[in-house]
Image (cartoon, rainbow, N blue to C red; front, side):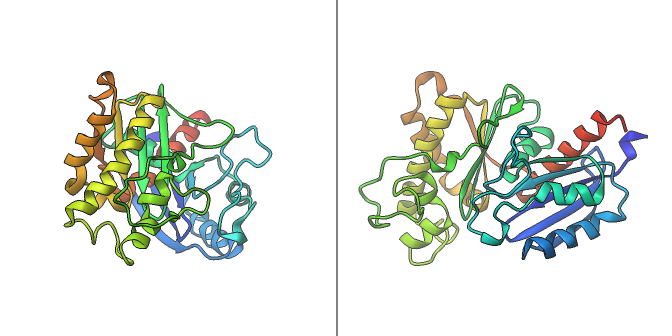
Length: 294
């Protein structure tokens, strides 16, 4: 039966590749982590792991920036990443040509959004923003039941926010492109720059620190709400671990910024934790398998 066919999921991250096989109900059968080194070494190891698994399709969620528009000649390639060896590497093509099975391809944060919608706290919803906050800030957007793609995938982590006059980060944020974008001010490098190498988790007991981060995040969530009209906004990544600490202030700040018609948007921590992208990849593989009539 199709429900018992194995499918594959690959979360292709900048530091590690997470490979898994499982079934349509979300059951994970096997799982393996492979360090992300050079493209050739890494993808050879990934292909070798999947080669004898008998999977019917594979869903891939890749680190970015990457080309996710199937009509683009760059589709499936990693683009202008700081990991210079990976620039313009054909990740999708190299895997698909070797495994010879249907392979779906999207960003890691888009598939994380898809994972929460399919198996997690946004199940049944049609309009969702999934924001991951770690070493960077990325957003996956589901609108009208479909993941948002355009010329590129959304780069919503780089929206500009208004600086808090109390901020001690200095003239320049941690983003090489913008001094006042969300990523530069609240992602890991910005937090460490401001607080002498400490992480957001280290600062969880500091009310002023949580207030500062919540203020920046509330500004961004207001903008996402005005642009995407989501039913729910999900916070994932490393900062999600401190969500319970800053959530009350975040929601208060959000309500203060938001239009009256937007204040009922639900803001929650990711329910699937760091498994969200894996579940999203699995769902993409299921869709491909079913489309192929297998």
